[in-house]
Structure formats: C-alpha cells, structure tokens
Image (tube, rainbow, N blue to C red; front, top):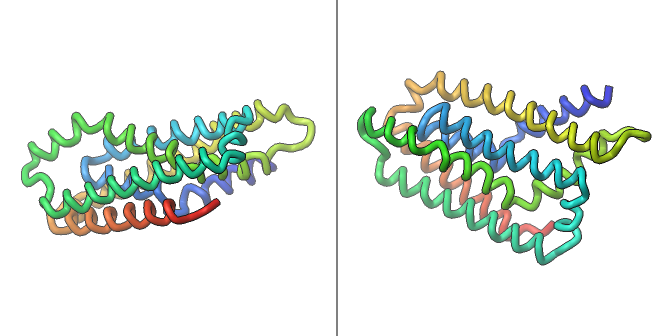
Length: 207
C-alpha cells in the first residue's frame, strides 16, 4: 500500500512542470529524442544521488548549513540564467538551417545534455530539501531506514524515467510541427524566458 502511494506521489511530482521539465523539453526540441533522453538520464542521476544522500543523512548537512544552501542556490540560479540566455541567443540566430547541421548538433550533443540535466539537479538545493522531506514519509516503522530510503530513491528514478520518456516520445511525434524554424525559434524564446525566470526565482527565494 505504501509503495503504491509512493509511486502515485512520484507520478504527480514528475508531472509538475519545473526546471527538469524545461531542460528536458528544450534538449528534445533542439536535438531530438537522444538529446532529451541524455538530459533525462543526467537529471535522474542527480535525483538518485540526492535520494542516496537523504538515505545516509548527507542531505541533512546541506539543510542544516545556511551558507552551503545559499551557495548552491546561487550556483543553480546562475546555471539556469546562463542556459536561458543561451536559448534566447539560439532563437535569435535561428538555429540550424539544414538537416545535416541538425544531425551534427545531435551526435556530439549527448554529453552536453547529460551534464546539463545532472548539473541543474545537483545545483538545486531544493532537490535535496525535497528528498529529505518527501522520501521519509513512506518509511514504515520497523523498516531499515537507509535501505528503504535508497530503494524508494530508485523507484522515484524509475517513475521519472517512464514519465519523461513518454513526454519525449510525445514531443518527438509532433516533430513535423515543432520542428518548423519559426516554431522552434518561438519555443527557444519561451524556454529561455522560463529558464531565466526559474533562475531568478531560485536566486531570490529563501528556504
């Protein structure tokens, strides 16, 4: 029962739009499903690391230290603003004009999207706070706490992968429309504004 409730909660969390969704959608629209999945794997690596940190009490150190929290918050905000500015610049340039240029963007771009997903997740202190507050709610009395939390973190990652995989597939299926130059420029502009907005909000928010 607790596992089903946890899976349902993970689905709702995954469906809520946020930084991860913005990064993954942008990479998918820019360079296709491979790039989107690379960003997803990077994000889920970060989620797994935060989940394991919560399992072994490491996240508590970040939560307890205001200085560490603020440093991560500022770093995360800078990363988001830079990525947003890059999106706006890409929209202004208009993006690749030929299929060959688009393919060249996809092939060498797998590492970049993975690091983008990983970096934005690890640089977001709210992910650590969320892991600390979310996962323990589903640990029942008598269970081995570290093992249970680590298991829940893995389940969380699997649910995320399923949701984002479906999202990426849906966006890829609409490529005929979303891949038009004018539409892509508009989507780059929107994603840029969203990323910068998320970065500014992260910078000015307190815990």
